[in-house]
Amino acid sequence: MSNNLVEYDQGVTCLNMMQTSPPGFNSLASLPRTVISARYGTDDNFTKEVLPGYAQDLWLVEEAALALKAAAEELLDGPFGFVVWDGYRPRRATLAMIEWARKTGQMWLVEEGYIARRSRHNGGAAVDLSLIVWDTQELLDMGTEWDVFEETSHVFNAQGSVLQNRLLLRDLMTRHGWVGYEKEWWHFELKNARSFPLRDIPYDKEASPEDPSIC
Image (cartoon, rainbow, N blue to C red):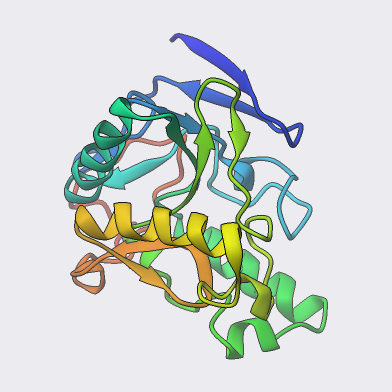
């Protein structure tokens, strides 16, 4: 296993790890121009806890991983790269998010779609990411941080360079088969994302496509 530690401007340490993904999934660790920052595998996320099922790698189903690779390869000729915060999400992590919302009196996040009961991430066909300046590892200004559940995170609720940066990311992803979510500038999914079964394979376990973890 080879580890490549990368730090970017907001003080988050990102770890690219070469790990084995289960059949049907691809690890994102080897993508070009891409830094993995699996923040649900740390307490640096909105729940302030490590979510169950996560580690430091991120996976996507093969179709999604290839689409993201194509987008990353387009970045090779320019100054930018990707930072990826989330990909495939074990079902148990989604349930933990919902339980957190219930315990903290914030079920409105579920009702308004910020926390999905059945997430496209659970099928491995959705990704949360942003753009960074590759040489400095600095995040492009998107107006909010990741997972800010407010109207300020809505894609078109911005002006000037912030809106330009959001549209730069959106246009890049759209060219490679991704569809954005208007309430979250960082979230993209495949057009056929709903066709992938929800899974509950933790990142530290290998499983076959027939694994009972299919939900």
